[in-house]
Image (cartoon, rainbow, N blue to C red; front, top):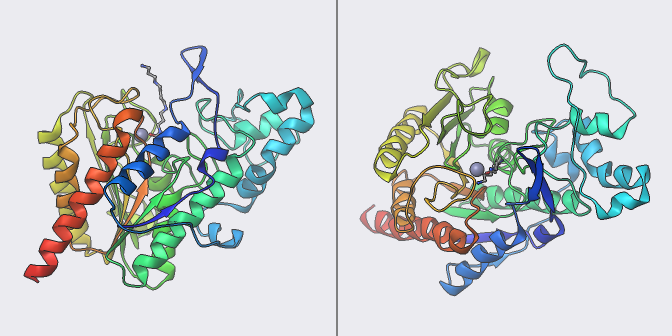
Length: 354
Ligand code: SP5
Ligand code: ZN
C-alpha cells in the first residue's frame, strides 16, 4: 500500500473541545496518526512518502476562496486580537443560523469563526492551516498515483476531513481530503468516481459538496444522525438533488450496531457503487466504528477490519484511502492497517485469478 504521510500533522494539536458545557481534552490527537505510521512500518506494508506539493488553486474545486482566505489567516487574526491568545485554542461561540445573514463577511474575528464553522468541538491552532494544507497534498498525491495506474494509495493524515464543507470547518475537520481526492480523480479524466464513507459519523461535508452532481456518487454507513454527530445530515431520505438526484445514498444504523449488520450494509453500499459503474473509489477510512472507541457507538472488533479490507478489494476498483476518525489510540494503528493489509491480500488474490 503506497502511503502519503502528512509529515506536518502534529503541527495541528488542539488542547480542548467543547462537550456538555465543559472544555475537555481533545480526542483528535497526533498520537492517532503516529500509531498508524508505526503499524505500517512494523508490517512493512509498502512505501511511505511525503506528499507532492500542490498549488492552493488545487483546493478551489472543493472549497470557496473566502473560506480558504479565512482559514489561512485565522491563527494570525486570533493572536492579533490579544497576544495572550497565542497560548489558547480558537473556538467559535456564535453562529449565523437561519434568519441571520451569512452573505456578509464580518470584520469581527469571532463572527467570522462562527460563519465558517459548524461546532465548538474543532479547535483551530497555530499549525492548523499548515497541517490541513499538507494533508490536502497527501490526498491529492494519492489520487494522482491512483489515476496514474496504482491499484491503491493511502493518505495518512490528520486533521480529518469529511465533516468540512465547501466553506466551513467542524467535527475536527478543516479541509475535505476525500472530496479533494475525488475531485482530482475527476480532473484526471475518470468520469464516475464513488466515495464510500465508513467512518462512524456521517460525512456531511462530503455529501454536501457533491449533492447536486451526478459524476461523484457518495454513500455512507454511519451512526443514525437522530442520535449521533453530525445530527443535522445523514438520513436515508437524502438522495441527492437536481442533476445529483439518485447519486447520494445513506445507510444510518442504530448506535450499538455490530459487525454482522454493518458488513451486510457494506455489501449493499458496494452494490450501489457497482450500479453507478464507478471507475475509481475513494474510501473515507474512519475506524471509530471500533467497539472501544471513546466518541462513537458501533462494536466492530480488531479482526473485523481485515475482512473490511478484503471486501473493499473485491470491487476491483482503483482505490484511494483517506484517513478520517478513530479515537481509541491504542488500537487505531492495528485497526487501520488491518483494513489496508486485508485489501492488499485480497487484491493479490484477485490479480492472480484475473
Ligand atoms: C472525523 C470525526 O470522526 N469527527 C467526529 C467528531 C465528533 N465530535 C463530537 C464528539 C463528541 C464527544 N463525545 C464525548 C463522549 C465522552 N464519553
Ligand atoms: Zn468519525
